[in-house]
Image (cartoon, rainbow, N blue to C red):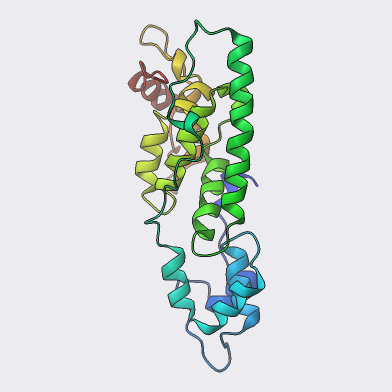
Length: 241
């Protein structure tokens, strides 16, 4: 998916997927009526769009409920942070005195733990399905990669951040991710010093994460090169620890 184009999409009445539940191109809540009843087809569509594939028992349960009640449950993020699944998630990362081979061995093993845990969180049926889909969405939007970050604890911290703000303020999430340890490493914030600002994160923040390329209706660019320079200067000094 092209992240620059994602938020430019506008549904229309001719778009079956967009209009299946609402029957319109706006955000008017869907209310079942004789010509658009709450049936297995619409329930399955809602559960597919808010998760990774419903089980038959979930579909049967949804049929006995109402669309509004289901959405209220899906948007409840009160259980955002599940229990720690491994002790290493609270351990301090290794310092530079540890042999690189030893660090790499432990981090790689822990990465498999993290991947296994996260995949299983996605597979859990029930009310957390939409939260898990949003965690994956934000992970794909504010991209970081273990191959560069290398510290598994930092990837776990970032995953918890996405859980906390799964349905929260995008502005606050963008602020938090700007000093997130994994992001600081991935987009070179650790090398962003006052005497030599690194503009990598500042550019990505404006171009991909928030404003996007292009201009406003009056022809004014969404941001200028000077904006990037000044933002980089404002973010100097942050380190992963």
